[in-house]
Image 1 (cartoon, rainbow over the protein chains, first blue to last red):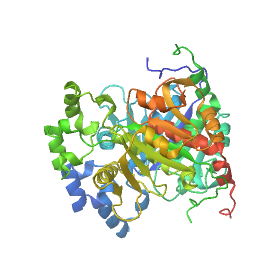
Image 2 (tube, rainbow over the protein chains, first blue to last red):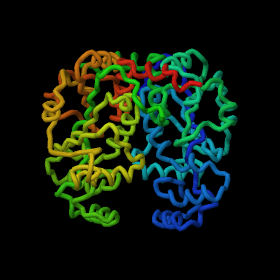
Image 3 (cartoon, rainbow over the protein chains, first blue to last red):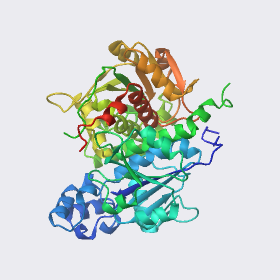
Image 4 (tube, rainbow over the protein chains, first blue to last red):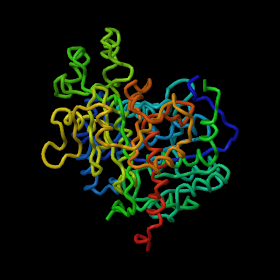
Length: 254
Length: 254
């Protein structure tokens, strides 16, 4: 008993997807780049098996941009965004109450589903290793119940699968709204699905925009994905009364 | 103009300190441990210059625990906690409005002051390098205006310096309270100071407990430092009207 067991009385579930996430293997075009080869070697992997990461592959990525491969290079190669966001939302009362479902849609159109019971590695290097294993084996752990699964899928395929009554997205290009108002509205609909951009700069693609029922701007400036996700999960907890129920529980008091 | 400039009309400032933070150089007792030596060598540093990190030094730390050096080993060596927490609170509207001051008090009684204008490295490896530089040079950058400064200091010295009218701490051993209520109360006092434990398990030391005016429990389970910090900053923004002011600002609308 560590207090994480559920005290739920409602079954309302928030579906949260990080979309167009900057989480991808090194693209074919730069697999033979010296910076990439050296990085892969040091990690005892093949260049085809490692995640693109701007922190280590900046020079190779500049080459990718210059060569005009029609890749959105400025949006790519930031697995830390996904790691930080997951850390901020998976170890929360909402998830412990089993009222959160998290998905990652990547820029290469993969969809990762995450089991709420996962205990994510807190260390970045371990997280990278885990995601690389996921790309290689299609699920982790490789045998038994998957805690993460990956398969090809678009933003639209995610919607077909979840069948939300509404899809909300956060963007500085959206309608000015207080996040708490957005959470309140989301609490009133069945199976709300929220899209948060999993990339460092730029905006939702036209495909993503077409999938949204509403686009909301919650601050004048662009907020990091992990800030938006953490705050929305918290507001949603409040709207459906999770915080109130859990903090009033007396069975752990002396 | 990226929307981060202030629209403030109030000068209320939240002081937030991560206390007893698991951020320390490798202790003398294990500097000659093979795991530590190998790690330092790979990073081209001396064992005296590297941060203790459970993700890489687990075996050496077990030795530290066994040898009964009277160190709180289970609370030590987690720089990721500090990195994640800072990422969650420094790039927020409250900080952009210059109404947040962040401090880190470490388990070895150092106090780190952070300039609100800092742009923290998002990458973990870079963050580690920056903190190691801070320990070595006492400020970063080494010349010019410091974005981070470090000096010896206790929890009590932090209080003497900030002179808060009240010190709140979050702990599962505290009084059950809704976090929003705590934020509302903090918004009513002058220079509130909030303590959040910067360690992976265990509770505040007796020295820290003596410094607290109130200890609050906001969930049945223990929450990660970055979740507590992110949520409290957000609630505080709401209480003092930051979110409301910033999202209503029309000068960026078409």
